[in-house]
Length: 383
Image 1 (cartoon, helix red, strand yellow):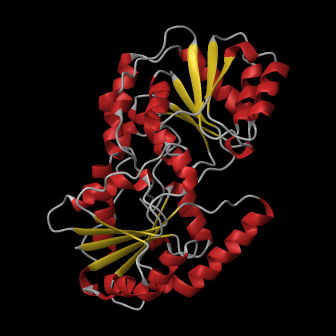
Image 2 (cartoon, helix red, strand yellow; image 1 turned 120 degrees about the vertical axis):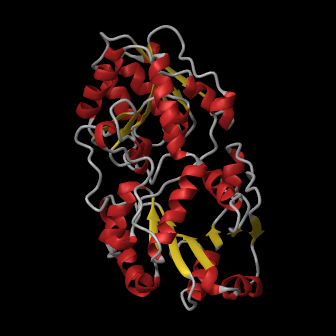
Image 3 (cartoon, one colour; image 1 turned 135 degrees about the horizontal axis):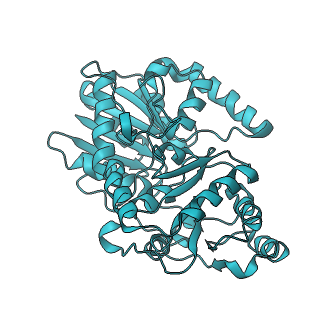
């Protein structure tokens, strides 16, 4: 099988499963990107990751795009990052749909909030009308992405939950939590969309419980959040840390008892993967794609987006449980084998086999069944 990924950049969010695919005998994998890394990614300390045996091409010309699309189409699968967002990706898509190759789309959910969300939905429906009949499968980020593409008109039979998959940090980390009060943590941009203000307001009503809240990141809202913590009378229990390189930041996550992603909207939220791989449970907003990973009560909990009351209830429950135990840590870390690059790549191949008519519809490996599944979190009906 010949698999070609068409992306905007060479991101760490894709390297684990592409490298795993390329290592499989009989699989020829190529990654094509518009650029290596955006400047803002480099400013955050990102570097171009290793894609193993995959062939990597950056900014190919039209002739090279044509050769990649037209070569051995009956053996080829092309997977495009979105339909219309990136010029090179879209040019290649328009050529690939004229061949007999399998065509797939990988994408986050559109941001569905407000009037801009309605405009994005209109564009999504237009794209489905233009290209949907020739798209064989869509692997969006989580059930949030599934709902988005179905609202855009994509057939349920062709949509399969997927996500972002990062390198496993376990081997290099000492994931024992710090002593003292229950350590809650947020890592990310300090902007309104990320919802750190919701956490501060929820914690202000939980002064009687023993907790500390570590906030790591930079952004336009930092001073406002510091002032809010002072105004709410919890500033001494909230620590703001500057952004650090990825591995240093994950070490801070690994020292925490609970990680929180309170976003008002997130297409995925890859730090959820990283926290779970460290054995740290996650409290995640329902408007994050990565909420799809919280499939059991011992992995964490999903709370209603925007709801301070809902978040307060969840926080109170997890703080009352006390410090993270070695047994809980090991259970989560063992489960996280389900979200490695190897596990994700096998599932992607199962999707490809299914849409080509040679296999059953696969269930995502991170979905728990039977006694493992969280109460109230049954598998979606199509699974």
